[in-house]
Length: 277
Image (tube, rainbow, N blue to C red; front, side):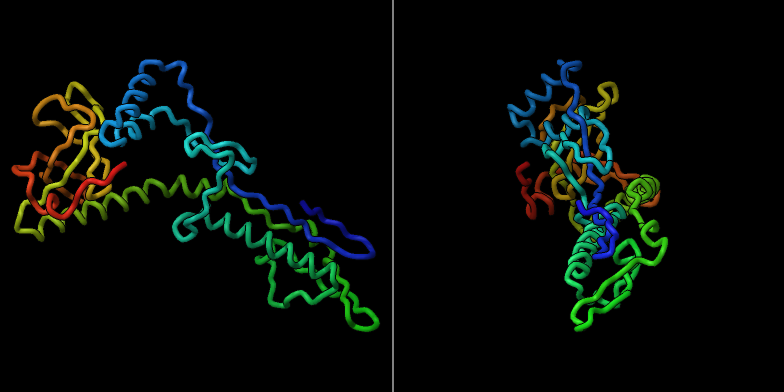
């Protein structure tokens, strides 16, 4: 970690890399022995090809926290974790990219300062997150350069506030989910309306949500979609395979309902086989 140091010989820009580490505490399994037993049995038997265990285990997860200190992430099984792979669609990832770029640029500028070399003139405040050092003196042989910061510049460091990014993400997450749902339902509606044959989907029952109403969580393999289904035949078992067709869909209203397919040999049956979990 390089600290800012100004003296008669040379200057260093503060260069500390701070990142938005995502952490998640270990779940408290001791207080829920019955549910743990169910989860372990689903894993042992690989019910539904592993999908049922994955769905059931989510209830134990604790909320993810984003902090600048490195802590473990229980769900990922990692000592530390930074999410930064999608800077185009996630603002927090874009902030992480900006922090890494600033870190590398400052490291290079510090190297140029030590060597007395020329700092690229196109560098700006936003590139470094602080003011760019200015030339104050050339050596007699004109081979080295001395730099300084303009008075007050050393206090004008632009720190990236990851909490601001998380606040924006939290505010926009419902809109993002609604958009994803809309286009998924729109795709299903177009798929069904453009086919002369019955379009059915192979689904696996993940588990029961409401025993009184026979309401179940299902996973539609072809669509990569987790959805709710009201059973028309009574109780279902986790891992049970169903062939369902679309009963009705309204993308604008966010409505999608399935009903039992009249056959198992429609378009989906011929073009798709269920992937392994």
